[in-house]
Image 1: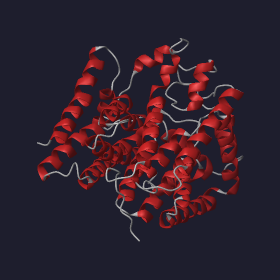
Image 2: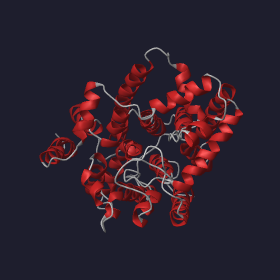
Image 3: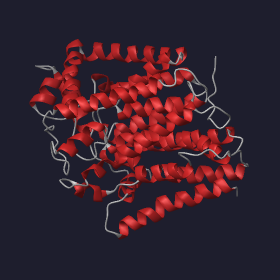
Length: 427
């Protein structure tokens, strides 16, 4: 067994078993709680209930615009665009929830498998980490264990969240990108944006990078989905959705699992309640939160899209990962389960970091990547209790970790040399 394979196996056991066992012994919730839901095939209806309500309302003949009724009058926090409801048109009405449950369950596996494939491809392409079939199998097994005990991915499933589908689409997209399948990656990004519009920013990044096949496929698939949605649900529904985007951008969420700059500022200023979830009410508008989060989003997107304009990392796997993570970080609301996108990003980062460490490079290395994974992969309920204390900034620990990963991606993509992860380009 190679040194890297041994390290991966030991780390996977330490994270998935030992750390979780310590949390359980301390009487804390853990990722095992989510794993039990996944193993038993049981999930909630966090996305499915409001989506079904919205779809039924439109199908029965809406008396007033959908979002005015559901979001503003009924105060149900349904913030998905109309395009997301096309999924329900494709599924049978009988046994709908069971179908969605099964689809989500399978897509957790899709997320895990594609993340493993991303890691395997990167390690095999690195001159420092090429391995025998036996070592590759051990690494794949360790990576699969890490993927299937990654809290954001499993939490999305147990909630019954559409984010499960987004996580799977992104993991597949990351693999398509480093495999040179640009058009396929573009279509997958369009599907992500049909659920979470902020991911359309990745298509803009591709356009700025001169990735015409990727951006063209994303725009074509996105327009096709939009046209289908317009024909199915009408122009008024789509224009009505803009008021939801404006409202969410102005208010955000104070509840501590919202790991964004806006959420951090809400909690820092005591604007709203961070200790429990209110399913109907958003925190009051606060100009510091609003303008602070907008400024942070602009800075994050500028760093991801405009720097470096030229260089060896331009358009590579790490550049792609930085753009995707920036789209998540720049959102007004990004719950813990939205950071399921970190799983394939970690897989993208390990090979170049491992190669850089072998070459004696300093800075963010494999140990810090392991620490970032540990923070991201585990639910730390103790942070919930920091509300209204001087320690409440620690409730944003996942945000700080994601920002650290983002900074590392920016540094890695700017580094020239063979340790950078290659990305195959197909003409």
